Amino acid sequence: MNDLEQEIWDFLHRHLQSIFTRDVATYQATTGTDLSLYEWFVAPHRQDGLDFHLFMIEHSWAGTGADFRYDLLEPRLQVYGDGETAVTTAVVSYTFMLTVAGEQGITHRTHNESRVLVKTAEKGWQVVHVHKSPAWQAPQSPPTSH
Image 1 (tube, helix red, strand yellow):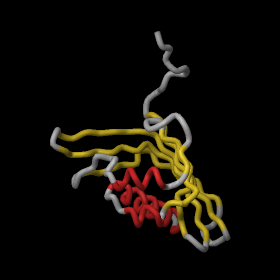
Image 2 (cartoon, rainbow, N blue to C red):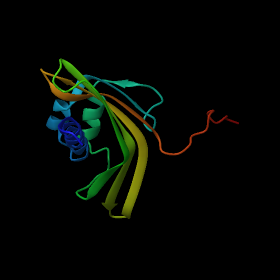
Image 3 (cartoon, rainbow, N blue to C red):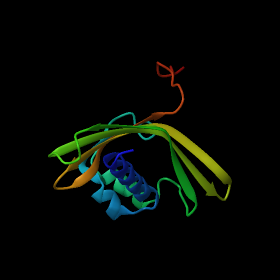
């Protein structure tokens, strides 16, 4: 792994930790104000901006208490630029697995995730787009109602 790749993975882990530890300041510093995202388990539509996620983070949406961990399964990194040019873009994709130890024992949640990161001289690295999908084969057509 070269220095730029290590920088990107370190940044991503800082960003993800901010979500689960309710660190709003770090989340805001590591996320573009023009964020767009698809979260299949929240809504079947794109969400734009930070307001929704700031609310969720402040109210501990992830259900994570003091004892959690996450793993990035089959991580992949694609980098466009050298980290020194005006703009460098990185796409990270993986299966995200969250493990939480709570009152009812240990639970696991997984989903597939892609994040687009952009680095500028002015703001450094920021997440500007997120796409999440189920970690199982979804049906090709929505269920029909009876």
